Image (cartoon, rainbow, N blue to C red; front, side, top):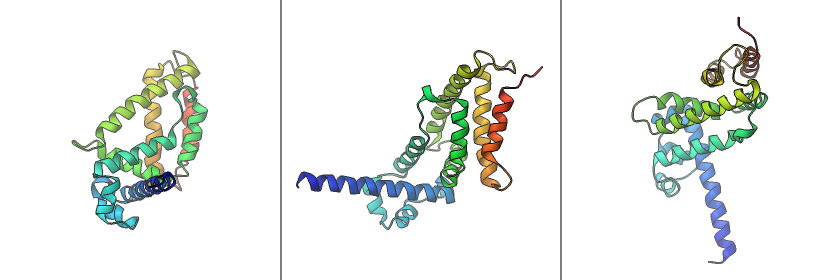
Length: 193
């Protein structure tokens, strides 16, 4: 097979994989991971289940691809995070409800024993807390105006980000996710006596 044909086939394969991951994201957002089936994902992209298995041999492999794509969309090098960039990320997330819904569904399900995404989220939260600690230390030093350390504040920052996503998904007309997050950032800078 000529090199050009090999490259075209590779590009088509990558495009098909991306299409499958997009369909999986939609199906998981609608049904959760446990309720999502490979058949439903395959049907959404016009494949048989066997055709889907050619690209993703297991449901877990497809889940990993969905999670990796989500991380790529939010990827900003740790050294570049600042609280104003976090506020921009929250604003950007408000434009991607399907991705936020998928992430939230998987996160909620992952707390159950034996869920295939449990290890991913455990590791991810450890990384995110460490990253948020670095952001807070860079911005405030060893103590925030409240007297809390960056290590004590980082889990609260992460909880606010994720908690706002759940509230916004449930009632987007009543919850201004970007505005509420900016309000929280203002609270971080307030002195508490």
